[in-house]
Length: 380
Image 1 (cartoon, rainbow, N blue to C red):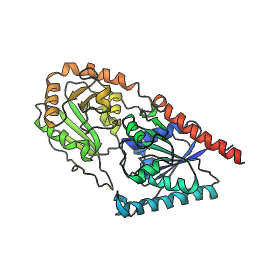
Image 2 (cartoon, rainbow, N blue to C red; image 1 turned 180 degrees about the vertical axis):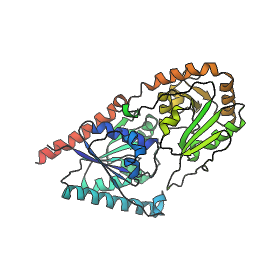
Image 3 (tube, rainbow, N blue to C red; image 1 turned 90 degrees about the vertical axis):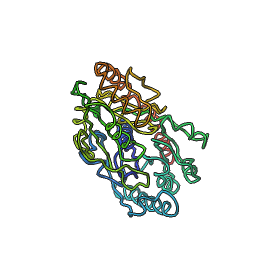
């Protein structure tokens, strides 16, 4: 029998941790013998050299692109929102029909890689074709009647631990498996190359306001230190969410937009600072731990705050500019303690290997595909 085939929808026009997580999941699923097509509004993010190290060696993976009208691409509610996703649905349906008629490729499942509110098109296509849906959830899901109706069609929801309880409140009928993020071997970051003789602060995230770039910059200015700071940022596209102004290099702060040599530049830093407000997971934090950087996180009850211990395998600070600036000053005066804390953090990262972390999610997805295969055999 031919290999099974899935189509993954990617409606996010910029790169981020959620897309990296989705790519790793698809990579692990591909290892089981499943062919993958990605239908993306930003095909380059799946085919460019910048992203190839993230997605790894995904065999039989094809990336297709779709375009959106400017004003519709930012629509998150109202008639424009419905029109936007109706058009994406029609384009996705045409792609599936084309692959079936021209390439003789039958689609066994549709995968939403961003969240039900963004991936609503796959549910419309599922309603028309009967193709089952597998939904990835990387963060909070908005409350709406449409999203609840859509989720009811999902054969499988793979969600972060922080989102599972609220998803179960919506429907006890949902089949939910925890999304445990991890790093693939080929994506393991290069190791830190510098000591803590001079502090080298590192911040890496998108310019979405809740990522806290403004907090980081103000704290660096206020703290008493001789450190230099490196900022790597992503400009979000087509979003109505609040964003910070793109930083510029000045004084002891260097700012770069999505540098192609990010892995090399990160290895030349020694302290990773997170200023995100209740980060659902924080893939960049995991990458920093794996690279051997000392990780500095806010005391906010988020994922890594619950799993790391202050001054044992990370440094924690009271959220906000004042708390972070005082913590930077403390590190300046206690450099001898930092190496041991960073090394302990590096050991924590070893528990986050993709082949282990994604195993439950991949197993659940293959069960859905097995049910599809059995159904096709019974009709043959």
